[in-house]
Image (tube, rainbow, N blue to C red; front, top):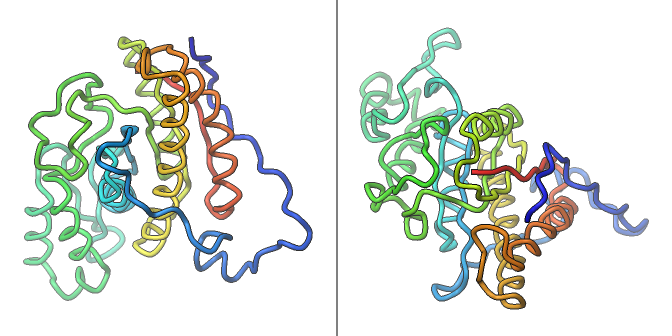
Length: 278
């Protein structure tokens, strides 16, 4: 069976060759020290890992990543871990606050547009919400998710196909406190399905520019992970993939290596990794 390490940090990348130090200014702008991340879509007939993206409010970082992965033909769901959805308001002391799992992105968009269209267009909230409402209906809270419960009522969401059964193979969080909240919640839920899930954190600042670059970094990692899983299934077959089959064991063992290689390309996005259980 898969080993269950706790909060193991992905292995550090090997040192770069002396002649290959990237320009730090370009890295800061692009987030990557490689010319081009992987951006291709997975073929319809190809194997696809199932992904979950998570940030605090299921508005900016997790939704940018959700869109990138779904657009690459990867099954994807997304959540927030906060107690409430919080968006900037007219002042720092007056945020706009909403409940998860109820109010739609469309309703939030219309409310903010009625409040102050100039302000919320200028700070990017209205464009962000206009994007979000094309991805799924409403922000969801991770702690309210029941792994293994069918999500058939989400059939209009981007990335829906493949997530109908309510389980994923990889959870990617965008902030360490979200990573901690996800692990705490999975522990509290007790692992009743006895099903492994990789939890990876990629620290991304919560602004629109960083979310865009970070979304590309998450897509690159997702495609690398998917390729690694597909290779293991080609060698060992698909039997036991959802539990402790040979292909699953092989993939689980290679994930830290894949994350380490990805970290070389994206040194500005420090990553954490652990194996948890549904």
